[in-house]
Image 1: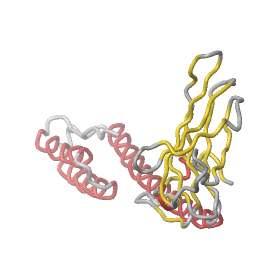
Image 2: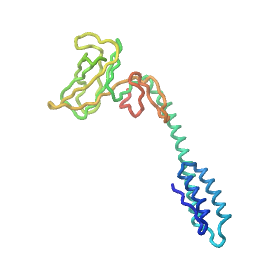
Image 3: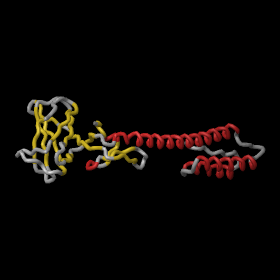
Image 4: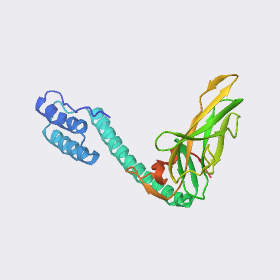
Length: 228
């Protein structure tokens, strides 16, 4: 909000002084500082105004209204910032209930452990009539291929018990997967979803909750496609 200057006719010195308040508003001073500066200058102007050519009362009223608006906006911003901080804290506290649950986020990682199946998900923009899921080890070599568990539009889940294409058991470690889908012989783009167990909850610099998904990293709640 711009603050116009009170410039009494015939008194350029006071016009310059009044301009100082407007400059303070543009320099990022707080509303309280601007208000104090303005009132100080206003009193000086009233004391030194030309009795034969006094300042316009309507201009003074307009200035006072603008100063009050600046103060009100700053108070509102302070209140909103405080409220957002409280909401963020409540969201973080509430998110602790997600610890131990599995979250699906955009990604292609698979964390395989002995005796424990792993898996993920994928999303299709439309129904398909064929396709497969390719699993690769950390070196990028294909170790297994699985049929699509779902061919309809939307999200589908799959699991992998660690059995490789040659029948042997995969070693524990990090793997990746990709989805190849076709419809009428044409390739259909599919987005992959990695599954990670929520190991903890923390706040970012803005006070918003984030989920620690272990090897998948730290993710915001907005990154989560589905909780299981």
